[in-house]
Figure 1 (tube, helix red, strand yellow):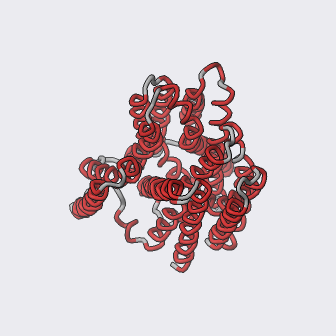
Figure 2: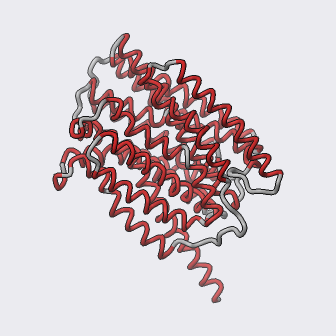
Figure 3: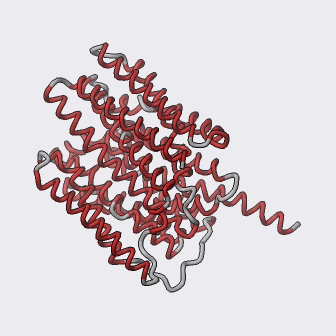
Amino acid sequence: MHQMVRTSADQSRRWLVLAIVVAAQFMFGVDAFIVNVALPTIANDLNASPAQVEAVIAIYLIGYGTLVVTGGRLGDIHGTKQVFIAGVFGFSVTSLWCGLTQSGPELIIARLAQGATAALMVPQVLATIHVLFNDEARARAFAIYGIVLGLAGAAGFALGGVLVGLNLAGFGWRAVFFVNIPAGIVIILAALRWMPAPPARQNTRLDIPGAITLFVALLCLIGPLLFGHDVGWSPAVWLVMLAGVGVMAAFLRLERRLAARGGIPLIDLVLLKDDVFMRGLAAVFLFFFANLSFYLVVTLYLQADLKVAPLHAGLVFLPLAIAFVIASRHSAVRAKAKGTRVLIEGCAVQITALAALFLLTTAVSTPSVGLLTAALIVFGYGQGLVMAPLSGVVLASVPAASAGAGSGIYGTTTQIANAAGVAAIGALQAAVQIAVSGRAAFAASLIACAISIALCGACLAWMRRG
């Protein structure tokens, strides 16, 4: 009887732990989007150049994307709780720094530090879920994670518009960073109280040479994607990326030699031999390639072409967020019976919404915001069908001992995809706008997003066969 009560308490506690870690994930996700709406105000207040404004977003992704695998492995070695709390604390402190900055260059440095601390925090979220939920509740837990992940994007746009528009306490754009501080304090206190502390691995240490090599490789791959547009995609950009490919190959050779000597490499090399996991990563890349770029081009279209105010532009995404949550709940139930098929159906729904947006914006010179919102609701529903179960499906084959490393690889893939999508679709949008018009540029961007999502569906079908 005592054992039954104890088991019941443990079962209840893990849902509380889930709430703690997904709250941190929500904070990170909101911060990735909330700045977009505030960028024009930031540029005016700090006299920042256009390149500096773009770097405020790009450097955050670089700091996170280049270090997230290392952060995941640190969680495997030292314990997810310790690394998670350190990451949340660092994220809160650097958010305060971002809000207090007095110049564009200082904000860029602060955002780099903020992204780096997020690389400690975020991998522990998926790793904790992966370890705590290894029974029939797993699908529901990952569905909750997916809901939070998608909701954070829409909430970020909306909250950014509200905070900048209302100018709370006279903070203006600085409030978009200050809001992280009380949230971080609550998360830290809750984690100290309720989050389990798995024992650290004995006689293990971080693969420092591997971490440095991977950092350089990812920096060479992600950096040019984010800044290539500013230098006109000169040959140097492609040479740096080619060098990144070479350094990545050297990293893999270094990791194999370390494993052969009995050491613990930065990534679990067995994961790279798992066909289902690798096919899943391909689907993840294609999905997120169209994710952040879609929200950015829609925001630009609303504000630049339709002249919608920042506050109203942010609120346009709220119905999308509601549709996303509804779809996420549906997908959690249906995925138990249909598996990956639900995700493929979600891709089809998103493509339908993109086609509707394409027809609406090409047939009508100034479409109403109401009609655009209706199409966005359909898109949000389709996105919820995919994103909610995606991480659980892809990480299903990852062993618990490598949960942090697997989560780090997943996180790196999403950030490289986000960066590549913003660079490629952003370059397409800019080129067509110069050559034709803003409306044509938006239409071309929608086509690119639809192609990426269609390929994602194809990879999911390939993964399903595996």
